Length: 439
Ligand code: ATP
Image (tube, helix red, strand yellow):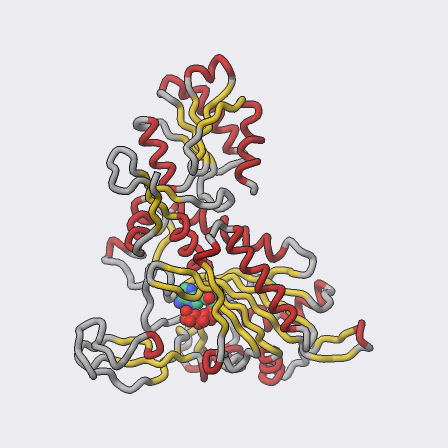
Protein backbone atom coordinates (compact mmCIF):
# COMPACT_ATOMS: atom_id res chain seq x y z
CA UNK A 1 0.00 0.00 0.00
CA UNK A 2 1.39 3.41 -0.95
CA UNK A 3 0.84 6.50 1.16
CA UNK A 4 1.40 10.10 0.10
CA UNK A 5 1.61 13.14 2.33
CA UNK A 6 0.36 16.64 1.75
CA UNK A 7 1.80 18.33 -1.36
CA UNK A 8 0.20 21.75 -1.27
CA UNK A 9 -2.01 23.83 0.98
CA UNK A 10 -4.93 23.63 -1.45
CA UNK A 11 -5.44 19.98 -0.49
CA UNK A 12 -6.06 21.03 3.11
CA UNK A 13 -8.13 24.08 2.19
CA UNK A 14 -10.48 22.00 0.06
CA UNK A 15 -10.77 19.11 2.51
CA UNK A 16 -11.36 21.59 5.35
CA UNK A 17 -14.23 23.11 3.42
CA UNK A 18 -15.68 19.87 2.01
CA UNK A 19 -15.73 18.20 5.39
CA UNK A 20 -16.86 21.07 7.60
CA UNK A 21 -13.60 21.98 9.33
CA UNK A 22 -12.98 25.55 8.16
CA UNK A 23 -14.96 27.91 5.92
CA UNK A 24 -14.08 31.26 4.47
CA UNK A 25 -15.55 34.04 6.62
CA UNK A 26 -18.65 35.75 5.17
CA UNK A 27 -18.42 33.49 2.14
CA UNK A 28 -21.85 34.39 0.80
CA UNK A 29 -20.60 37.99 0.47
CA UNK A 30 -17.46 36.95 -1.36
CA UNK A 31 -15.42 36.34 1.79
CA UNK A 32 -13.28 38.64 3.91
CA UNK A 33 -9.58 38.46 3.26
CA UNK A 34 -7.61 36.37 5.78
CA UNK A 35 -10.64 35.65 7.96
CA UNK A 36 -11.83 32.08 8.49
CA UNK A 37 -14.66 30.41 10.38
CA UNK A 38 -14.31 27.08 12.12
CA UNK A 39 -17.07 24.64 11.19
CA UNK A 40 -18.44 21.82 13.34
CA UNK A 41 -15.45 19.47 13.01
CA UNK A 42 -12.91 22.29 13.05
CA UNK A 43 -14.18 23.63 16.33
CA UNK A 44 -14.09 20.19 17.94
CA UNK A 45 -10.48 19.79 16.83
CA UNK A 46 -9.64 23.26 18.09
CA UNK A 47 -11.32 22.68 21.44
CA UNK A 48 -9.47 19.40 21.87
CA UNK A 49 -6.19 21.14 21.08
CA UNK A 50 -6.87 23.97 23.51
CA UNK A 51 -7.94 21.55 26.23
CA UNK A 52 -4.78 19.54 25.70
CA UNK A 53 -2.63 22.67 26.00
CA UNK A 54 -4.57 23.87 29.04
CA UNK A 55 -4.12 20.48 30.67
CA UNK A 56 -0.39 20.37 29.87
CA UNK A 57 0.01 23.81 31.43
CA UNK A 58 -2.37 24.04 34.36
CA UNK A 59 -2.61 20.43 35.57
CA UNK A 60 0.60 21.08 37.50
CA UNK A 61 0.90 22.88 40.78
CA UNK A 62 3.24 25.66 39.57
CA UNK A 63 1.00 27.09 36.81
CA UNK A 64 -2.39 28.80 37.04
CA UNK A 65 -4.59 30.34 34.38
CA UNK A 66 -6.19 33.71 33.66
CA UNK A 67 -8.54 35.11 31.05
CA UNK A 68 -7.79 38.81 30.63
CA UNK A 69 -9.93 41.19 28.62
CA UNK A 70 -9.06 41.95 25.00
CA UNK A 71 -9.26 45.70 25.55
CA UNK A 72 -6.67 47.00 27.96
CA UNK A 73 -5.66 50.41 29.22
CA UNK A 74 -3.91 52.20 26.30
CA UNK A 75 -0.88 52.79 28.52
CA UNK A 76 -0.26 49.03 28.52
CA UNK A 77 0.75 49.21 24.87
CA UNK A 78 2.92 52.24 25.43
CA UNK A 79 4.74 50.44 28.24
CA UNK A 80 5.14 47.22 26.28
CA UNK A 81 6.65 49.10 23.34
CA UNK A 82 3.86 48.16 20.91
CA UNK A 83 2.73 51.74 20.20
CA UNK A 84 6.20 52.84 19.17
CA UNK A 85 7.80 49.64 18.01
CA UNK A 86 5.31 46.99 16.88
CA UNK A 87 6.01 47.67 13.24
CA UNK A 88 6.78 45.63 10.19
CA UNK A 89 8.71 47.19 7.32
CA UNK A 90 6.29 47.68 4.42
CA UNK A 91 7.06 48.23 0.74
CA UNK A 92 4.63 49.06 -2.08
CA UNK A 93 4.93 48.01 -5.70
CA UNK A 94 4.52 51.30 -7.55
CA UNK A 95 3.19 49.47 -10.61
CA UNK A 96 0.32 47.46 -9.10
CA UNK A 97 0.00 49.05 -5.63
CA UNK A 98 0.37 45.70 -3.85
CA UNK A 99 1.91 45.85 -0.40
CA UNK A 100 4.46 43.46 1.02
CA UNK A 101 6.49 42.88 4.15
CA UNK A 102 9.98 43.85 3.12
CA UNK A 103 11.57 41.18 5.33
CA UNK A 104 9.53 38.42 3.67
CA UNK A 105 10.32 39.16 0.00
CA UNK A 106 13.36 39.73 -2.19
CA UNK A 107 12.95 43.34 -3.29
CA UNK A 108 15.58 42.92 -6.04
CA UNK A 109 13.31 40.32 -7.71
CA UNK A 110 10.21 41.18 -9.81
CA UNK A 111 6.95 41.91 -7.97
CA UNK A 112 5.23 38.59 -7.25
CA UNK A 113 1.86 40.12 -8.11
CA UNK A 114 2.48 41.94 -11.43
CA UNK A 115 6.06 41.03 -12.40
CA UNK A 116 7.30 44.65 -12.52
CA UNK A 117 11.00 44.99 -11.71
CA UNK A 118 12.64 47.72 -9.61
CA UNK A 119 9.28 49.25 -8.69
CA UNK A 120 9.36 48.80 -4.93
CA UNK A 121 9.23 51.85 -2.68
CA UNK A 122 11.65 52.34 0.19
CA UNK A 123 10.49 50.38 3.26
CA UNK A 124 8.53 52.28 5.90
CA UNK A 125 7.22 51.23 9.28
CA UNK A 126 3.68 50.00 9.52
CA UNK A 127 2.16 49.53 12.99
CA UNK A 128 0.31 46.24 13.25
CA UNK A 129 -2.11 47.17 16.02
CA UNK A 130 -5.81 47.65 15.30
CA UNK A 131 -7.05 50.84 16.87
CA UNK A 132 -10.66 51.52 17.72
CA UNK A 133 -12.75 53.85 19.88
CA UNK A 134 -14.22 52.91 23.22
CA UNK A 135 -17.41 54.60 24.36
CA UNK A 136 -19.74 57.01 22.59
CA UNK A 137 -17.47 60.06 22.62
CA UNK A 138 -15.21 60.26 19.61
CA UNK A 139 -12.20 61.96 21.16
CA UNK A 140 -8.67 60.71 21.23
CA UNK A 141 -8.75 59.83 24.93
CA UNK A 142 -11.06 56.98 24.04
CA UNK A 143 -8.59 55.31 21.65
CA UNK A 144 -8.08 51.66 22.51
CA UNK A 145 -6.34 48.79 20.79
CA UNK A 146 -7.35 45.24 20.08
CA UNK A 147 -4.58 43.35 21.86
CA UNK A 148 -1.84 42.14 19.49
CA UNK A 149 -0.74 39.46 21.98
CA UNK A 150 -2.21 37.91 25.08
CA UNK A 151 1.02 38.18 27.09
CA UNK A 152 0.42 41.69 28.45
CA UNK A 153 -2.81 40.55 30.14
CA UNK A 154 -0.60 38.19 32.12
CA UNK A 155 2.06 40.76 33.03
CA UNK A 156 -0.38 43.34 34.33
CA UNK A 157 -1.97 40.67 36.52
CA UNK A 158 1.32 39.30 37.81
CA UNK A 159 0.94 40.62 41.36
CA UNK A 160 -2.80 39.89 41.58
CA UNK A 161 -2.17 36.28 40.71
CA UNK A 162 0.98 35.89 42.78
CA UNK A 163 -0.58 37.29 45.93
CA UNK A 164 -4.04 35.69 45.70
CA UNK A 165 -2.64 32.27 44.79
CA UNK A 166 0.26 32.62 47.28
CA UNK A 167 2.70 31.53 44.57
CA UNK A 168 6.42 31.30 45.10
CA UNK A 169 8.93 31.50 42.30
CA UNK A 170 9.19 29.75 39.98
CA UNK A 171 5.59 29.77 38.84
CA UNK A 172 3.69 30.38 35.62
CA UNK A 173 0.50 31.99 34.34
CA UNK A 174 -1.24 30.55 31.30
CA UNK A 175 -3.80 32.09 29.01
CA UNK A 176 -5.65 31.24 25.81
CA UNK A 177 -7.27 34.04 23.87
CA UNK A 178 -7.73 36.04 20.73
CA UNK A 179 -5.10 38.42 19.42
CA UNK A 180 -5.29 40.82 16.48
CA UNK A 181 -2.61 42.06 14.11
CA UNK A 182 -3.14 44.12 11.01
CA UNK A 183 -0.70 41.93 9.06
CA UNK A 184 0.60 43.43 5.81
CA UNK A 185 0.53 40.13 3.99
CA UNK A 186 -1.70 37.57 5.64
CA UNK A 187 -2.02 34.25 3.90
CA UNK A 188 -1.31 30.57 3.62
CA UNK A 189 -4.79 29.71 4.86
CA UNK A 190 -4.92 30.00 8.66
CA UNK A 191 -1.13 30.34 9.00
CA UNK A 192 -1.16 34.13 9.08
CA UNK A 193 -4.45 35.88 9.75
CA UNK A 194 -5.42 39.21 11.25
CA UNK A 195 -7.50 37.65 14.01
CA UNK A 196 -6.07 34.55 15.66
CA UNK A 197 -5.85 32.74 18.93
CA UNK A 198 -2.77 32.41 21.07
CA UNK A 199 -1.89 29.99 23.84
CA UNK A 200 0.70 31.72 25.97
CA UNK A 201 2.39 30.93 29.24
CA UNK A 202 4.72 33.23 31.15
CA UNK A 203 6.98 31.44 33.63
CA UNK A 204 8.39 33.73 36.33
CA UNK A 205 11.80 32.80 37.71
CA UNK A 206 14.51 34.22 39.89
CA UNK A 207 16.94 36.34 37.82
CA UNK A 208 19.76 34.10 36.64
CA UNK A 209 17.56 31.02 36.40
CA UNK A 210 16.05 31.87 33.02
CA UNK A 211 18.39 29.77 30.86
CA UNK A 212 17.71 26.60 32.83
CA UNK A 213 13.97 27.35 32.53
CA UNK A 214 14.42 27.87 28.81
CA UNK A 215 16.06 24.44 28.40
CA UNK A 216 13.31 22.76 30.43
CA UNK A 217 10.50 24.46 28.53
CA UNK A 218 12.09 23.80 25.16
CA UNK A 219 11.98 20.12 25.88
CA UNK A 220 8.43 20.20 27.24
CA UNK A 221 7.08 22.17 24.32
CA UNK A 222 8.80 20.01 21.70
CA UNK A 223 7.36 16.90 23.34
CA UNK A 224 3.90 18.46 23.48
CA UNK A 225 3.84 18.82 19.68
CA UNK A 226 5.03 15.23 19.34
CA UNK A 227 2.25 14.13 21.70
CA UNK A 228 -0.20 15.72 19.25
CA UNK A 229 0.94 13.25 16.63
CA UNK A 230 3.26 15.60 14.71
CA UNK A 231 6.08 13.60 13.11
CA UNK A 232 9.46 14.71 14.50
CA UNK A 233 11.00 14.98 11.04
CA UNK A 234 8.58 17.84 10.36
CA UNK A 235 9.78 19.89 13.34
CA UNK A 236 12.99 21.79 13.88
CA UNK A 237 14.49 24.49 16.08
CA UNK A 238 15.25 27.96 14.83
CA UNK A 239 17.36 29.99 17.28
CA UNK A 240 17.12 33.79 17.02
CA UNK A 241 20.52 35.36 16.47
CA UNK A 242 21.72 38.91 15.86
CA UNK A 243 19.03 41.29 14.64
CA UNK A 244 16.34 38.64 14.91
CA UNK A 245 16.48 38.70 18.70
CA UNK A 246 13.81 41.07 20.04
CA UNK A 247 15.09 44.00 22.09
CA UNK A 248 13.48 42.63 25.26
CA UNK A 249 14.90 39.09 24.96
CA UNK A 250 18.21 37.57 26.02
CA UNK A 251 17.47 34.32 24.15
CA UNK A 252 14.75 33.03 21.84
CA UNK A 253 14.07 29.96 19.76
CA UNK A 254 11.19 29.02 17.53
CA UNK A 255 9.78 25.60 16.90
CA UNK A 256 9.28 25.48 13.16
CA UNK A 257 7.03 23.14 11.24
CA UNK A 258 7.50 22.05 7.65
CA UNK A 259 4.33 23.63 6.23
CA UNK A 260 3.44 23.11 2.56
CA UNK A 261 4.79 26.65 1.91
CA UNK A 262 8.08 25.80 3.65
CA UNK A 263 9.59 25.70 7.13
CA UNK A 264 7.97 28.40 9.26
CA UNK A 265 7.40 29.40 12.86
CA UNK A 266 4.77 27.59 14.88
CA UNK A 267 5.79 28.44 18.46
CA UNK A 268 8.16 30.92 20.04
CA UNK A 269 10.06 30.32 23.28
CA UNK A 270 11.44 33.59 24.55
CA UNK A 271 13.51 34.55 27.54
CA UNK A 272 12.02 38.03 28.06
CA UNK A 273 14.19 39.12 31.00
CA UNK A 274 12.37 41.50 33.40
CA UNK A 275 11.61 43.89 30.51
CA UNK A 276 7.81 43.78 30.70
CA UNK A 277 7.45 43.98 34.47
CA UNK A 278 10.05 46.75 34.59
CA UNK A 279 8.22 48.77 31.94
CA UNK A 280 4.87 48.31 33.66
CA UNK A 281 6.41 49.45 36.94
CA UNK A 282 7.76 52.52 35.19
CA UNK A 283 4.54 53.43 33.36
CA UNK A 284 2.04 52.56 36.11
CA UNK A 285 4.10 53.83 39.01
CA UNK A 286 3.16 50.66 40.93
CA UNK A 287 5.67 48.47 42.68
CA UNK A 288 5.55 45.07 41.00
CA UNK A 289 8.48 43.52 42.88
CA UNK A 290 8.35 40.06 44.31
CA UNK A 291 9.40 39.51 47.92
CA UNK A 292 11.55 36.41 48.19
CA UNK A 293 10.87 35.10 51.69
CA UNK A 294 13.21 32.18 51.03
CA UNK A 295 16.06 34.56 50.32
CA UNK A 296 16.06 37.05 53.20
CA UNK A 297 12.99 38.96 51.97
CA UNK A 298 14.91 40.28 48.99
CA UNK A 299 12.76 42.30 46.61
CA UNK A 300 13.24 42.01 42.88
CA UNK A 301 11.46 41.75 39.54
CA UNK A 302 11.34 38.16 38.33
CA UNK A 303 12.68 37.19 34.91
CA UNK A 304 10.23 35.68 32.47
CA UNK A 305 10.36 32.68 30.21
CA UNK A 306 7.54 32.71 27.67
CA UNK A 307 6.09 29.96 25.54
CA UNK A 308 3.78 31.30 22.86
CA UNK A 309 2.01 29.20 20.27
CA UNK A 310 -0.68 30.20 17.81
CA UNK A 311 -3.61 27.88 18.25
CA UNK A 312 -4.59 28.21 14.60
CA UNK A 313 -1.03 27.67 13.41
CA UNK A 314 -0.61 24.58 15.56
CA UNK A 315 -3.95 23.36 14.25
CA UNK A 316 -2.81 23.95 10.67
CA UNK A 317 0.32 21.89 11.35
CA UNK A 318 -1.86 19.13 12.78
CA UNK A 319 -4.12 19.17 9.71
CA UNK A 320 -1.10 19.06 7.38
CA UNK A 321 0.63 16.30 9.31
CA UNK A 322 -2.47 14.15 9.57
CA UNK A 323 -3.35 14.37 5.87
CA UNK A 324 -2.59 11.19 3.85
CA UNK A 325 -3.73 9.80 0.56
CA UNK A 326 -3.37 6.05 0.34
CA UNK A 327 -3.07 4.26 -3.00
CA UNK A 328 -3.26 7.54 -4.87
CA UNK A 329 -4.51 7.15 -8.42
CA UNK A 330 -5.89 3.64 -7.81
CA UNK A 331 -9.59 4.38 -8.24
CA UNK A 332 -10.80 1.30 -6.38
CA UNK A 333 -8.55 1.60 -3.36
CA UNK A 334 -7.67 5.26 -3.01
CA UNK A 335 -8.62 6.79 0.31
CA UNK A 336 -7.97 10.13 1.97
CA UNK A 337 -7.49 9.76 5.67
CA UNK A 338 -6.81 12.28 8.41
CA UNK A 339 -4.57 10.45 10.85
CA UNK A 340 -5.26 12.68 13.83
CA UNK A 341 -3.96 11.64 17.20
CA UNK A 342 -7.07 10.04 18.78
CA UNK A 343 -7.08 12.56 21.62
CA UNK A 344 -7.52 15.38 19.08
CA UNK A 345 -9.89 13.72 16.60
CA UNK A 346 -13.15 15.70 16.38
CA UNK A 347 -15.25 12.53 16.43
CA UNK A 348 -13.92 9.62 18.48
CA UNK A 349 -16.26 6.90 17.33
CA UNK A 350 -18.91 6.39 14.66
CA UNK A 351 -21.74 3.89 15.03
CA UNK A 352 -22.74 2.41 11.70
CA UNK A 353 -25.65 -0.05 11.64
CA UNK A 354 -25.42 -2.47 8.74
CA UNK A 355 -28.99 -1.66 7.69
CA UNK A 356 -31.82 0.59 8.81
CA UNK A 357 -33.54 -2.48 10.25
CA UNK A 358 -31.00 -2.39 13.09
CA UNK A 359 -31.66 1.27 13.91
CA UNK A 360 -33.36 0.67 17.22
CA UNK A 361 -30.61 -1.40 18.84
CA UNK A 362 -27.76 0.54 17.18
CA UNK A 363 -29.21 3.87 18.31
CA UNK A 364 -29.39 2.63 21.90
CA UNK A 365 -25.68 1.75 21.72
CA UNK A 366 -24.92 5.14 20.13
CA UNK A 367 -26.72 7.04 22.88
CA UNK A 368 -24.84 5.11 25.51
CA UNK A 369 -21.47 5.90 23.86
CA UNK A 370 -22.44 9.56 23.51
CA UNK A 371 -22.46 9.89 27.30
CA UNK A 372 -18.68 9.66 27.22
CA UNK A 373 -17.42 10.08 23.67
CA UNK A 374 -18.05 12.59 20.91
CA UNK A 375 -19.79 10.12 18.63
CA UNK A 376 -21.62 10.13 15.33
CA UNK A 377 -24.34 7.92 13.93
CA UNK A 378 -24.51 7.22 10.22
CA UNK A 379 -26.84 4.92 8.39
CA UNK A 380 -26.74 6.50 4.90
CA UNK A 381 -24.95 4.75 2.04
CA UNK A 382 -22.86 1.62 1.77
CA UNK A 383 -20.68 0.70 4.71
CA UNK A 384 -17.59 1.37 2.56
CA UNK A 385 -18.77 4.91 1.80
CA UNK A 386 -19.47 5.52 5.45
CA UNK A 387 -15.96 4.35 6.38
CA UNK A 388 -14.46 6.73 3.80
CA UNK A 389 -16.46 9.64 5.20
CA UNK A 390 -15.19 8.92 8.71
CA UNK A 391 -11.63 8.48 7.38
CA UNK A 392 -11.74 11.97 5.92
CA UNK A 393 -12.69 13.53 9.23
CA UNK A 394 -10.19 11.35 11.07
CA UNK A 395 -12.52 9.26 13.27
CA UNK A 396 -10.20 6.71 14.89
CA UNK A 397 -12.81 3.98 15.28
CA UNK A 398 -15.97 2.86 13.53
CA UNK A 399 -18.37 0.45 15.21
CA UNK A 400 -20.50 -1.68 12.93
CA UNK A 401 -23.67 -3.12 14.36
CA UNK A 402 -24.84 -6.15 12.34
CA UNK A 403 -27.44 -8.90 12.62
CA UNK A 404 -25.01 -11.10 14.57
CA UNK A 405 -24.81 -8.32 17.17
CA UNK A 406 -28.38 -9.20 18.17
CA UNK A 407 -27.23 -12.74 18.96
CA UNK A 408 -23.68 -12.39 20.31
CA UNK A 409 -23.92 -8.90 21.91
CA UNK A 410 -20.76 -7.90 20.09
CA UNK A 411 -19.87 -5.37 17.39
CA UNK A 412 -17.13 -5.03 14.80
CA UNK A 413 -14.67 -2.23 15.50
CA UNK A 414 -12.72 -1.00 12.52
CA UNK A 415 -9.45 0.85 13.08
CA UNK A 416 -8.95 3.98 10.92
CA UNK A 417 -5.21 3.55 10.35
CA UNK A 418 -4.80 -0.20 9.89
CA UNK A 419 -8.37 -0.85 8.68
CA UNK A 420 -8.20 -4.01 10.80
CA UNK A 421 -11.50 -5.19 12.19
CA UNK A 422 -12.03 -6.74 15.56
CA UNK A 423 -15.08 -8.25 17.21
CA UNK A 424 -15.63 -6.66 20.61
CA UNK A 425 -18.25 -7.53 23.25
CA UNK A 426 -20.62 -4.59 23.75
CA UNK A 427 -20.12 -4.66 27.51
CA UNK A 428 -16.36 -4.24 26.91
CA UNK A 429 -16.70 -1.61 24.19
CA UNK A 430 -16.20 1.51 26.32
CA UNK A 431 -13.04 0.12 27.87
CA UNK A 432 -11.80 -0.86 24.42
CA UNK A 433 -12.37 2.68 23.14
CA UNK A 434 -10.86 4.31 26.24
CA UNK A 435 -7.66 2.28 25.80
CA UNK A 436 -7.29 3.61 22.27
CA UNK A 437 -8.37 7.23 22.73
CA UNK A 438 -6.82 8.37 25.99
CA UNK A 439 -3.26 7.58 24.96
P1 ATP B 1 5.72 35.99 12.60
O1 ATP B 1 7.23 36.16 12.54
O2 ATP B 1 5.21 34.76 11.88
O3 ATP B 1 4.95 37.23 12.27
P2 ATP B 1 5.92 36.48 15.40
O4 ATP B 1 7.34 36.07 15.66
O5 ATP B 1 5.57 37.91 15.29
O6 ATP B 1 5.37 35.69 14.12
P3 ATP B 1 4.98 36.04 18.04
O7 ATP B 1 4.72 37.46 18.30
O8 ATP B 1 6.14 35.38 18.69
O9 ATP B 1 5.01 35.78 16.47
O10 ATP B 1 3.64 35.23 18.36
C1 ATP B 1 3.64 33.95 18.92
C2 ATP B 1 2.88 32.96 18.07
O11 ATP B 1 1.60 33.47 17.70
C3 ATP B 1 3.56 32.61 16.75
O12 ATP B 1 4.54 31.62 16.93
C4 ATP B 1 2.41 32.13 15.92
O13 ATP B 1 2.14 30.76 16.20
C5 ATP B 1 1.24 32.96 16.42
N1 ATP B 1 0.97 34.06 15.50
C6 ATP B 1 1.59 35.26 15.44
N2 ATP B 1 1.08 36.03 14.46
C7 ATP B 1 0.08 35.30 13.89
C8 ATP B 1 -0.84 35.54 12.83
N3 ATP B 1 -0.88 36.69 12.18
N4 ATP B 1 -1.72 34.56 12.51
C9 ATP B 1 -1.72 33.38 13.18
N5 ATP B 1 -0.88 33.11 14.19
C10 ATP B 1 0.01 34.04 14.56
